[in-house]
Image (cartoon, rainbow, N blue to C red):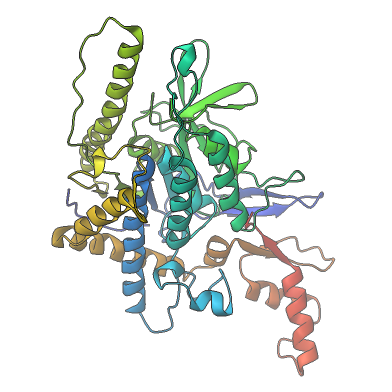
Length: 497
């Protein structure tokens, strides 16, 4: 799996413009299209960094533990640059809390995956992790806490008589309402209120880390793969693979996207979005491994040769293959086919990995995949075993993941990848775009003037206010300094939601 990895560089970010109605739209800055590789700018934004996450039900905890390890390594390498590097926001101050809240955080929690990747994609429960890490911009500690809560509230309460098939068994194994509640709770903890007035929508600023989740759109003729994107996908000339549902990002609530892409057959009831029904993308037209489709999507967005690194994380290779016997009973045959379907889905993750490895090697694109051998892949998607006060399932997942991470070759390869991620972040942090990407903030002049520019940094707006509106560049007293600071703050445009 070891691949020689080199970092290269991409196009400027889109510049938002303020409309007459006060809304913010996105248009290419300086006439350069963000989403088409029209020519290199030889900067650290040129090349794209991709993180893809397999589905795996409760085994997704292993995925989060591996990403947590990556963030710990990033912390180590960032600290080696100097003692002042306290978080992945650097050189900006940490933005995710204050006082005692920050003091209680682990060091790795101050380093966010969104600051190291341009795209994070997932299938099945991998998409739930992708939404938490990318769209909600959560740290790994909070994601692990939320994921364990999901396991307890959802997988901990399996229904009896819960197979889809004959009328007697015509319901799913788990209550979709509990899943919805956990998802909404996670969103609200990120101070995005899920209320009747304005639910937080899935689309987000295209400047920030982009989220892709994969689902299957069911219809009367045939099921079709479908991508839920946080950004607009324009038609591309890079057409070696079919473009899926191109167009603007659909204004769908975050929780509904999460529900649509975790609706695994027999596990959760499919969700209806307007006139269409969606189910888990890992059980059908997609592999449970989203890497191939995500790589194609990024090349369609930016052009061939624009990917610097593709990092793929699996949820364990299965060691047990269920034999499929012939039975006359339709119900028995249905159950066995379901077993075969589930086993094939996990096996297909590795088949996808082999195809991607061959494809990316031929193109010279760096690619790394981390996936655990042994019994992890044999843990059922919804397993939740308790012995006394101990959760046997979570212990097994943690133990196997820790043993994997302790392997010297695995750790060495992870360190290699983390160094590349850190080096690229450091270079990006030197540019004017970093403030908008890292924090979601840009600035416009709060005074009535003809200058409608969008300023990347607060210091840029500060300079403008001093030059065009009579503010003193060197305030004589605290009152003048306060007025200037208030003017800058009133010009802030936030993209956090």
